[in-house]
Length: 252
Image (cartoon, rainbow, N blue to C red; front, side):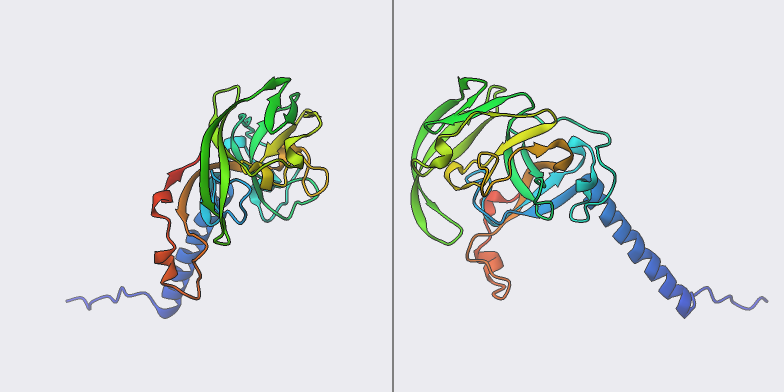
């Protein structure tokens, strides 16, 4: 009779198997993050009411192809894009502006290459034509600090039919601009919270036109959201501050 064979792995073999499992999992996570989709947290109110402070959004990397900024925050690689796809007017885009390449921004794409963009008395104009803008009333909005403020709401509809809600807190410098002609290979970005957004409208405090190579990806949906009362040092607030109505919530 043959003696039984011990098939149990040795100690070193078990350690090596565990190491390979962890390495494969990390590699898969990196591939997903850099090539497929990446989560981002919304830290400011510039895209309210579309995106709220405390929203966690999923951004797809394949939407516009890949550049060195697709590897954010590593930012290395050759110039240009591979498998490039063109963004559409009205897309919500994550990008890295020229001169501020260590920080991700999220705004709405308003101006395409060759467009002439101007804001006149709070009304957005594209190529000399006013964009359709419908007032839908006043609401009390709670900001990221818990302050409640009244704000006027407008539904803006771009020439390609993309509609979204903007906030208007009253007359401000961003409501009266010069005409911006978007250069080839660049885009003009604006926040939906028009009076509280540092964006392409401003030479000081903004970032000007955004190069095509600097696009990181397209925001697709909010997968989870927490309000201003949430704190990791108070774990119960992860439940009390959870915004259930924004769980897996599409953005447009």
